[in-house]
Length: 184
Image (cartoon, rainbow, N blue to C red; front, side, top):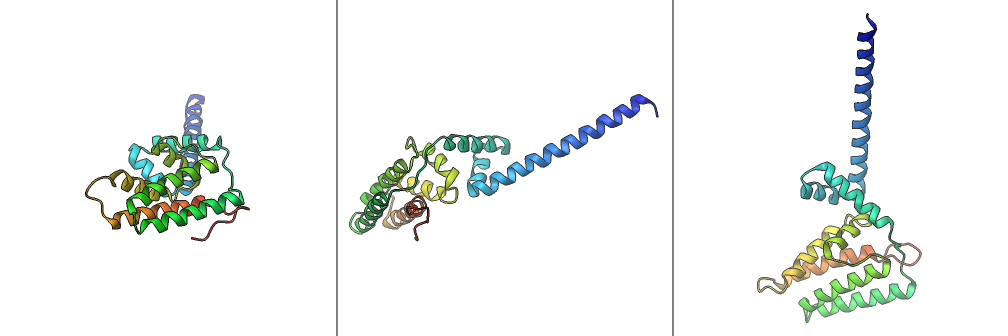
């Protein structure tokens, strides 16, 4: 076999092996993101219409949140937030629309206290999705209900469901001092 043919074969083998390693690595990275972000991964792919762009967005979120100084609640903060949440739930019976707005403000206050910035809603949801990907859909659903709560078309059951969504996020964000999760 002539040396040029051998060189072409070696180059082709190296190229195929390199492409295989690249595809394996990319697939492994995608699987890791899917496991880390759960349903949020699929939402991002659907939103961006492209897996590569969605994965870039998720990596950007992760990098952004790494710079935050997320902290646990102090015991007094934990008690205050627990008490305030109970008040919001109690208020729901007489004033569901007001209670839902208060729940939204309480969630923002809790996020701020833990170390998350509380800019616009989409940024808050993206930030929360890094550490709490399985409850961020609750946050989006509650926010959607909140945005439409001024319409004449909302009913008490929709508001009740929104409070349930806020509760799921609240429970996730409320870590007992020392790192143990609060029971729902």
